[in-house]
Length: 428
Image (cartoon, one colour):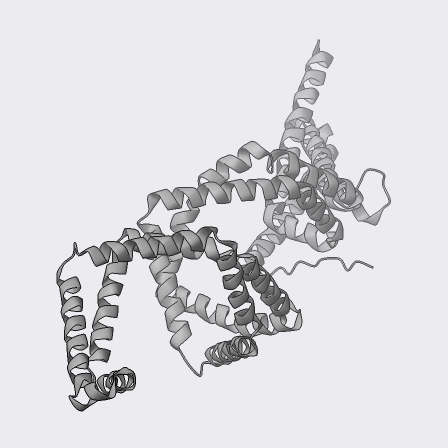
């Protein structure tokens, strides 16, 4: 069962308007009583002088006009004297029909595409959003609101199985990526920019540094001694050979590093480009890279790392929502305010936002206007008409009561005119 909606008469000025309505009602009733009393008195005094006949005619018609308008005003809202007279209490008796017609009227004349579109285009949504975001307090409120929702969103994400779905989708997408052409393209761009020559210089420096270390030279010397005849070992040929090898290598490395056009660099270019070509076209390279990719994604350490990162992120979100840390909130506030400043200075972006929101809201209104009409109709049908009528009377009742004054005056003048015509006809 639907509970009728109630109206509380407590708006500013309602009490004063109610008191004024009572005063005007009393005055209109007193005018009606006065015209009736004067009619009786004039009728009684009419034999004494013909002028009382004119007064009686005016008062009689004024009384009738006042009664008729009183009946009309009362019948609009309720039954006069509580009597079940047909075609009275018009508003109450037609509540459902009025509700349906009101909803239909609003749908047809207020929610049509043309006026809705024209009104929406008058609103600068982009500037409103920009001004709203640039206000620090509003951005802080928005950041706090977002942070309060964040832990619940995280919990809902975990409970709904969305994380499992997302992780599976990410893994599936990574598995579907063909890394060989991607790596070949990256290396080709690397070579095209000449950055591989810097890598060559680093390699030469590293090899030179390794060769000149005492441990490396001792190891090379030991290898040479194992291969030399015994006679040469006596003359310490191993030391001589090691020194010559290291000196020659160092000179070669220095020569290559100092000469950008050294033939070795060109050979290195050809070697790298040959490797890049094989990487992009040789199926065996692609199989090896895919194998490495599968092994990496299957590693339990990777899953443990993902869980650890998610747990830390969730803990950070919870501490941010509880106010334990202000880092995320301050970052969000700065981000919102920066977005507002950027939007305020970008007229093109504001125009796009306005156009987009107009299109969206226009579609929403077009799709929901019948629902709005039904909602309005249902609301009017659920109103407590007794209280609603009291509210209407408080706001427009004084004007309706003045109809009674006008009825008495016009009725009296009409009666006076008719009596005058009758009097003149009798004289003829």
